[in-house]
Length: 167
Length: 246
Image (spheres, each protein chain N blue to C red):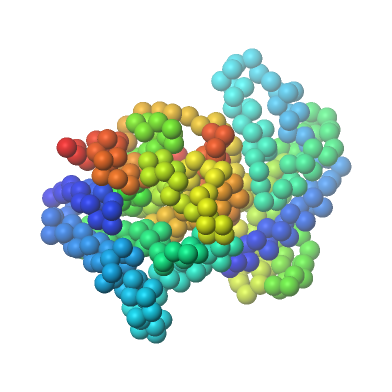
């Protein structure tokens, strides 16, 4: 199944623009502008989906196509609320027949599912969408540390060494 | 009864924080790790890996454990187009990148099979956890900040799971691109959360070996959630990553 994922992802990349093309498709960036609140904290929350849409995805084409047709604010609100499933056509690939279903919330893909994949049962695919953010530093209360402490000298000076009470 | 113990095995400080087991159980886990080191280290002339590399063993003569390790190596090598490899051209067979996570996961399994349900095993920054250190609270696994050794850049809340980080700091540029034999560039650190440390650790190392291409590759891996920092200090994070709000 794992080897089929790149094939499925490529199929999705080709099919998503077709599915997403509808005259009512909303532009997320605009929603943020229209709804720009005065409260800074609220603004941050509102801005989050915009960041998500800018993230790189294996579907690649999706962020571009979402901007295809600007509409009125009212239509956008409706689009945001709507959840719908769209099944793509069965596509013959060298690996076998592939058919995927995407779940859209407004014009955002929230799930991708393979209805038909070569040599496998219907299966849920990992959402290939990553959130992007700036690197932050914090000194938090933790139980353990992930991150290489390869040398014994480094370990003694490391956070993990301190947590283990190493001398 | 609880046990806290640190031992240097496979060149790594390995910490066991066992909350519901005794020293004898912890010792069984450590004994397995020492045995795994003796069997799989390419730096020990008598190890099974060294003997295979010298042609003293055929593939048919290998133990099922080494066959499992090598098949994991092969799978990731194929999946990354050779960027991840146990056999860098001009060097001996070195399955260490798979052995570490695989062996530490089995050490954790020994604790579980011995009746423990609450523990945290940390092998050089690769972590397996089980249960809750306090009722209702997950293990808080900090991910080391790539630039600041005494700070973390995210904290994950993990009950039964594994977290591995592959990074450049400390040991320097120790991960080579199997396609070129040269040190990899593009990423500062790759953290992978998965159910099993063999998967988390190998996925992190393989993604790192792929450089920037590793970002999307890792995100596509089944049942893996990622936290990746690139050289521009930009973070790429899976929506499903179990971030702990401190």
